[in-house]
Length: 449
Image 1 (tube, rainbow, N blue to C red):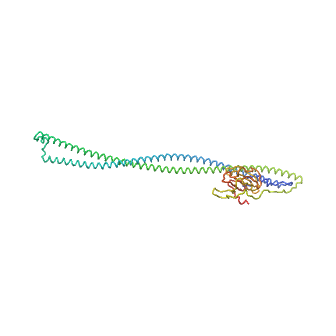
Image 2 (image 1 turned 30 degrees about the horizontal axis):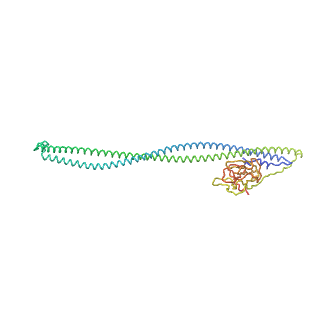
Image 3 (image 1 turned 60 degrees about the vertical axis):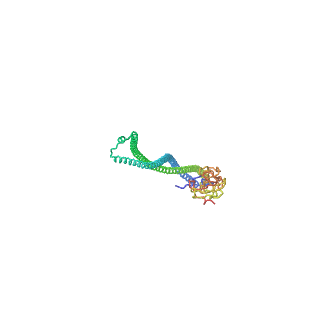
C-alpha cells in the first residue's frame, strides 16, 4: 500500500498544492485535480484500514484487560486462602509450642520425682541395711536361746521353772521372769515378721514407683519428640505458605502493572483512533473542496474554450509553505531522543520556565488540540510541504490554537508547562514522518537550526 502522505490535515495539502486557476486553464489542471482527488481517496482508504486495525487491537486489549482482571481476582482469592491457611498453621504452631512447653514442664517434674524417688531408695537401702542388722541380731538372740535349750537337754519347760520355786516370792519372781521372756520372744518374732514384711513392701513400692516414673518419663520424652516433629512439619508448611504468598503477591503486582500498561496502551489507541478520525474528517473536507475546485476549473475551461476558440494556456503553479523548521521554544535541551533510564524517549525536551512561548516550527494545520493523560495539553500540527507532523506536549494551559486551524511558521500556539505525565516545566517536542503514530517519533534534532 502506498505510504500515507497526509495522515493529518490534508486540507493544507489541497490549499498549498492545488493548481491556482488563472484566466487561462487547460485539461492538465483538471487532470491534476482528478489525480489529487484519487490520492485523497486512497489516503482515506488507508486511514479506514488503520482505524479498523486499531479497533481490532483495542478489542483485543480490552479482552486482555478483562482476562487480566479475572486473573487478579483469582490470585487475590488464592492469596486470601493462603492467608487463612497461614493463620490456621500459625495457631497450630503456637498450640504445639504450648504443648511442648507443658510436656517439658511435666518431664522436669517427673525427673524431679525420679530424683526424689532415687533418694528415697537410697534412704530405704540404708533402712534395709539397719533392718537387716536388727534381723541378724534377733536371729543371733534366737540362736543363743536355742543353744541354751539344747544344752539343758531340751526338757526344760516354763512350768518346771515355776514349780521349782522355793517360796511364793520366788514363784512370783519366776513367773514375772517367764512372762518377760515369753513377751520378749513374742515381741522378737512379731518385730522380725513386721520388719521383713515392711522391708519387702517398701522395696517393692519404691521399685514400682521408680519403674512407673521411668516409663512416664520415657513417654513424655517420646511425646515431646513427636510434638517437635509436628511443630517442624507445621513450620515447614508455614515457610512453604509464606513462599507461596510471596509468589502470589509478586504475581498480583505483575498483573497490576500489566493492567496499567494495557490501560495506557488502550488509551493511546483510543487517542490514535480519534486522531485518525480527525484526519479522515479533514480528508473528506479536502475531497469536497477538490471536487468543487474541479467543477470551477472545468467551468472556466469551458468558458475559456468558447472565448478563445478552444485554445488554452498552461496555468501557473505555487507550492507555498516553509521548507525547514525553526526552534519551537527557547531554553536548553534537557533530554535528547533515544534510550534513557525512564524508557525510550521519542522526542526532545526543552527545559524552560512556565509560560515560555511555544511556536509552530513550520506552516501547517492543527490536527489535534486538547488534553491528553500522557501528553497533557498538547497540539499536533501537520506540515504538508514537508510531509511531517510535529507534537508540542505538556503545555501550561489550554493551547492558543484549535483543531483544523491553519498556522504559519512562528505562530505562538501555547506556553511551556508541566501537565500530563511530566516532571518539571518543559516542552516535549516530537517529529513524525507523515502523520502521528504511537511511539513513531523520529529524532527531531536534525530538523532544527
